[in-house]
Amino acid sequence: MPQENRVFLSAEWRDLVMLNYEVDRALLEDYVPLGTVLDSFDGRTYVSLVAFQFRHTKLLGTLAVPFHANFDEVNLRFYVRRNGANEDQRGVVFIAEIVPKWAVAKIARLAYGENYICLPMKHRVNMNGETKTAEYEWKLDGAWCRIHARASAAPARAEEGSLEQFITEHYWGYSAQRNGDSFEYHVSHVPWNVWTSTAAGFEGDASGLYGLELGKVLRRRPDSAFIADGSPVIVSTGKRIRLESQP
Image 1 (cartoon, rainbow, N blue to C red):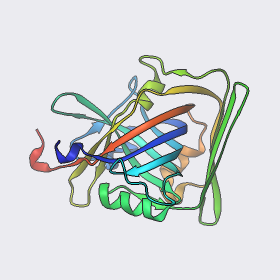
Image 2: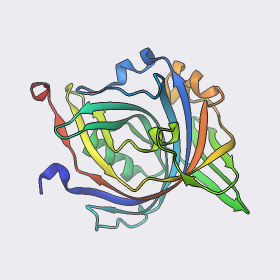
Image 3: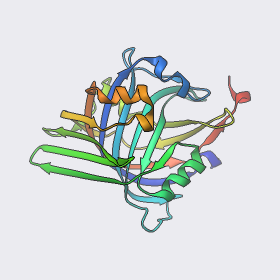
């Protein structure tokens, strides 16, 4: 098996809250890694604020690290494409990622060059009949930020061609490296079921973490929001994309 296809991490991602905001493409151009282009849905460009639970996390697919198997994550991400050898690879780029475990943040920065930060976090997820509520909080500069969603009715597979499918079914990750290269890795999971949200939003000041312009975006009402049930996932070790390797 090629090195880039080996398992780096296996886990379950559960109870994902996904807030999606349409933005001007120009706001993201500086974040686009080498070898990729911005992806869009019906001509619209989106960023997503996503919060979820890591469960049963294992390095290399088998190594459980004590006290680091279960934790929360919040990330701000957008969507790109790359012409791969065998397919049009649809991927995600993370602007910043928050976890409550220092070692997790350190490993992710070293392995993938991702912008991880360690902050205090907490969550609450409840199911009352057919109503599901989920909220995640993190403490930044002494103040708590909060992402939350409420949804009713039974979950269902994201419809073919829907925005929910576009958001949840990007199976590659890309990150820009300090030397100008990019890093590419595959994330595999089954399609998720989703609850369309009846109420959702973000509360707090995110400008210190994401910058003034993106901080303003997150203060808006999201253009769409939903909760996804999640599934087991496998993240590959990945590979570097270099200037000389571009078509």
